[in-house]
Length: 334
Image (cartoon, rainbow, N blue to C red):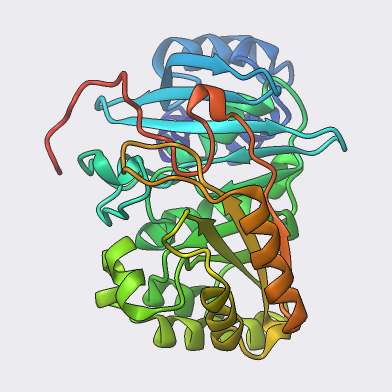
């Protein structure tokens, strides 16, 4: 829900200050509407229901994967499209991937979102309402800012949302923010905000190749980004997760694994997550499982911790890099 507007409405009605907290507590516990908030006066519940939408987002469409993953396409009140994904795992984890922007301005060549027109940053309420949508279905365990957009370009609203996620049952240590290497945001996370985890989309240790894949590398070169990540690690005492998308014939050779291990020093600072490529219109092909396993072994032989991400929701275009809100209407850039 629009939390600032809620506060404003309650003040205008002369309600006690604790009323906003009561409304939020019910929403964070998975309430589906104001009618369930039994410790609020009935008249106030009726007024809120009539004047303040329970969510700042409207659900345009939902899709359900064979593996239990769910994807929701939302529209904001001003018609901006965005998507969020709930991933269910056999060990009981329920992880929500949320968006921080409608579209993305950074045009990474392997990412479907980068082909959308950038709309705008999402508000704190719009970020939280993605998680609340799925919280109304079941208890959540993890939240990752790895959906549409570059979270650290919207750092104020992202950190504000992170502050409230424990109310939904998601601790700071189970919240992660993924960045392409937006150094001002990494520096902000080093100095301020809750102790959430940091993930870096790296995808190539070679500067020229990384710039081809991720044009932002021309603005914030990889050596500077890694230095910023090391400072974050020193301050927060947690490993930096490195996301590395495995692209056949592009970044999956033995010598590229060796180069990656070399730039990730000291190895104790980083943990690599190798990501099987999920099809997008970018024209790339995913590495074979044998190539991924060989890449992983090369890293581990050099002391770098590495895992292979379990792909979820590929059949509904909900996997990493596939979010594009393709059924939403085109909107002009803000």
